[in-house]
Image (cartoon, rainbow, N blue to C red; front, side, top):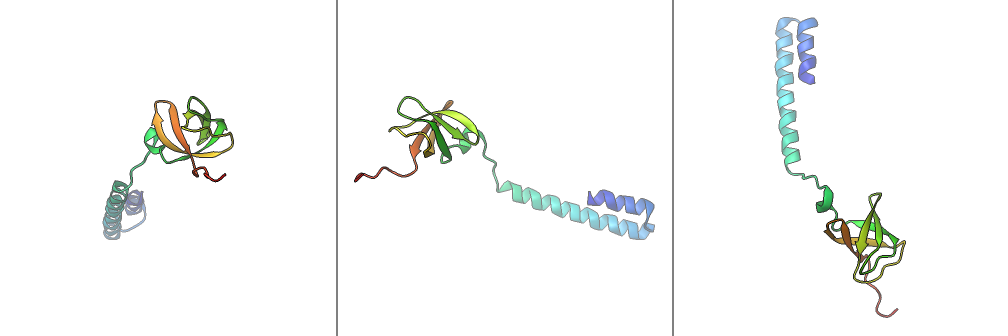
Length: 114
């Protein structure tokens, strides 16, 4: 974008010598910006889909047990199951994804003294 602006300045406003200098400076700035963003993006991987779900937090919509239940994750309802019953309204952590069913676990382990 900066390079385009420099070319327009060269054509319509500046003298040829000054215009060429502006275009060359803009070209180097654009190349530097491209190099910066490529290096910055190389270190960041976008995680989407089932790869990003484990470890995420969800809310139990319908009680979850070993066979069935429903949780809400990022505004979507998912079938879920858990090793032990979890009542509706609780927050859970997603342990695994198996097809369209999430395996969840309670956030805090149950207190053995209670």
